[in-house]
Amino acid sequence: MDVTLSKVQQDIVKESRRFLDKECPVEHARAMYENDLGFTDELWARMAGMDWMGIRIPESCGGLEMDQIDLTLVLEQMGRSVLPGPFFSTVVLAGEAILEAGSPSQKEQYLPKIARGERKGTVALYEMEGGADPGYVGMVVVLAKGGFVLNGEKLFVLDAHVADFLIVPALTSGGSESKQGVTLFLVDSRSRGLTVTRLPAMDGTRKPCAVRLADVQVGEGDILGELHGGRAPLWKVLQRAGVGLSAECVGGAQRAMEIAVAHAKTRRQFGRPLGSFQAIKHRCAEMFVGVESARSLLFYASCVQDEGDDKEAAISASAAKAYCAEAFSKISRDALQVLGGMGFTWESDIHLYLKRAKFNEINLGDPVFHRERVASLVADGRDSIALARG
Image (cartoon, rainbow, N blue to C red; front, side):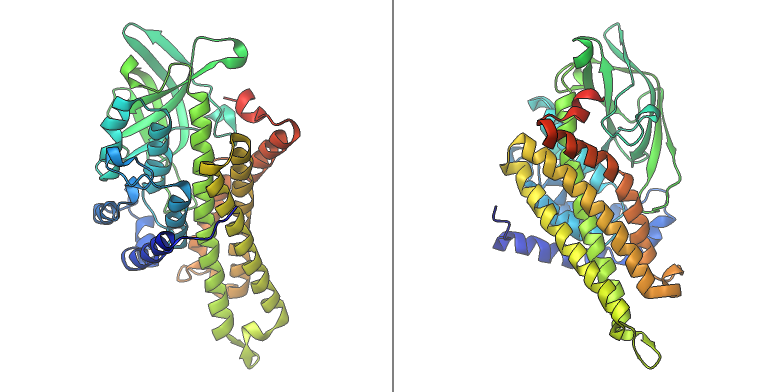
């Protein structure tokens, strides 16, 4: 498969890097650690002006209708800048879910506003009993007069505190036990009985929340896609989001390596540059190999999402998520070792990348989860995790 970037894609990388270096320097990421919202309206509006929110949205809904690889290129640069804010939750999670499962009227209602930056959303995934499995669904919906009633709690919901709407997967009656219906519900964040609580996080640029639903009423018009038919589109969204998170990891790993190499070139020990010592040279070389290997797997997984078959897309997405997340963590730790004591200070930027790496490593399924998924797909060709859990 040819993953050579076209002229347009090279321009995407160049313009994304230019924009983020100017509008989202590392000082902005630091400032958002203490910001309750985690982003500024000014930067959000400028990003919308770059048409980033509409990269994957169809032209008929005001978007650019581009491929996964094009979004990957932008997300890689966002990871390099440790971009804070609800872009990932709105575009990569909620927007992709509506694009994948929404009816024509739902797409018309939500996607143009997402593309213009007027609405923010997220997907409420994790539940207490599900552990590291982002696709686990245990919340049961009760059929009520004129609609449904949601009760339960979703954990680690990204940016729920600023979202205008949430997409909530829940179990609905119908079908055999092995095909218990999962339905996706569009829930207005202002709904009565919905409570959002911010949760502490190592990475201050991410804002996870707990979402409690107490007798939250939704109607048939709030069903995203088909009743009992939410499992397949949910896993498709998780798959693409895993590739998107991998892109962030590669961008962050690239920048962590650059910080370490720059320090090794300028820092002097025993009258000579730190980078002249064999142990440091070898560590930096290993970081370079890790970054390039992760990027190769990322680009392959991105292209396969649009061009490959379902099995190939699933295997490559989980392989990329497991490898890129671990590579980001290791490279960030290695960079910290190169910096030595300076890396542990707040003034050093490397801790921003190490914290983001640890958050990304467990988000949307940890490496163990994704290796299990790859093993099940390779062994019998069936996504046993997606079929058995949820």
